[in-house]
Length: 143
Image 1 (cartoon, rainbow, N blue to C red):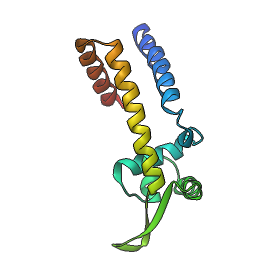
Image 2: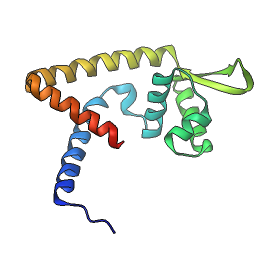
Image 3: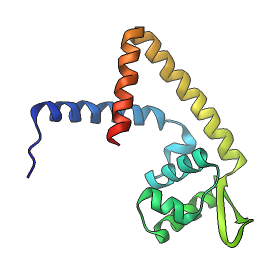
């Protein structure tokens, strides 16, 4: 079995702490704070891709189609997503964000972007901002 090095454990501990704080700050938005991780991930996927199916969302999240169906139904009941027939294949249903949800996502992103940009600007000089960018790129590489 692989043993975690002291350096790896140090990185993991700090990364976990930073992610927890960032996630808490970003989930303070009332509409999204009450949602489960699969629900949030489905909304993020739909915001990024505009439209999707239950099957594609389930695959993206790594859960069963039935579980994603429950998630999607909950989001529909909350008025956060809408379902429309696929114009190319009437057997399929395409999901997308409702206008209300899209407006809230846009406002949330604007607020969180401004908050994070202010923190970066206040706390980091230009060289440190470049190091942070490189760190984010490294995180994307391992994820």
